[in-house]
Image 1 (cartoon, one colour):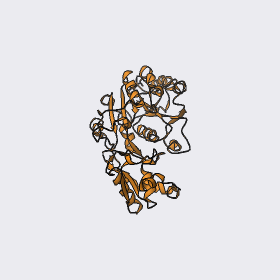
Image 2 (tube, rainbow, N blue to C red):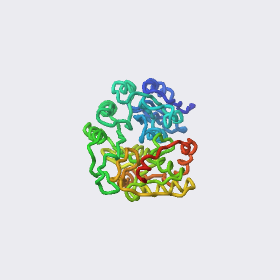
Image 3 (cartoon, rainbow, N blue to C red):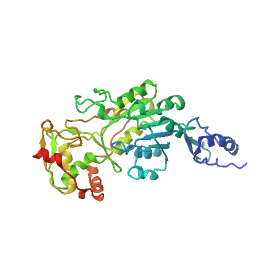
Image 4 (cartoon, rainbow, N blue to C red):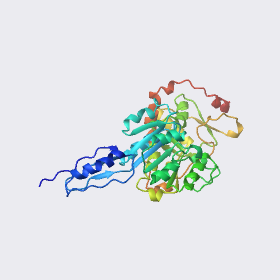
Length: 374
């Protein structure tokens, strides 16, 4: 009797998987094994093993809800890439308000995942986009309050997800907390905090991550570091609030996403936990200025001032006037995460992107600086 290798099951819709199961079973010999798929997953991906080993069907499927941009705008891109690399079937649902011709959205075609768009604040539209599908993991990088948390109930009652990951915000911490801040620090009553409480009330296996300041190769919010580069390349002084030695968590977006996707395989340990999402390589405002100057081949020039003495418009300085940093020790311990990137090592490519974009030639008004320096 001649034996045959079990046929490959191509990537297909879940409805196609069920229809194909009988055909697949019939085509396999009695010595071939078939692992029946579980009843979940937006799509199924599979591969045939070597002769005499079972056919493996991987059903875990992730849905990413991605906002229109800003500080968290790049996270979804990296999560999609990392989750695909982990073997999950990934659907990225992008808020339709995003400018799709700009980074990171214009790079979605490089990911090789399903991308759909929707008004993520419209519950009916979002529900229609996932009709007939199911997911084991949800990564919510959209909800800003309970009213915009459109899929949590479905994730609980219809999908029975293994994990609902929520991208919250470190901005909810009270500035009075001891620095660097831990997850049990006092928080304000923000919309994001309300979402965390809502997810817990639903009984979901939720995990919340609270990022702080983010930069990355495909960012569409360059404010944090460009503030320093704008001044250094033009041989201007960087006016720093306080003594300029305040520490901040300035983290590469790839590391931010990696902490969030590290939940896969650790769902039970991560359930109902809050994690600070920032690097352990804290830098001061003075440090950033010096590092930028080194990369640009310039001399760092700084001065300090008391912000209480000036009525400055919002955005005059990209960080808080006071120290505002977090410790990621909890994520390192429970999730086994650690950052792979450091700001000082990343600044050369970040600076080159700035130059390539012609930002060094941009006409900038430094009115707040002039007010400070008199």
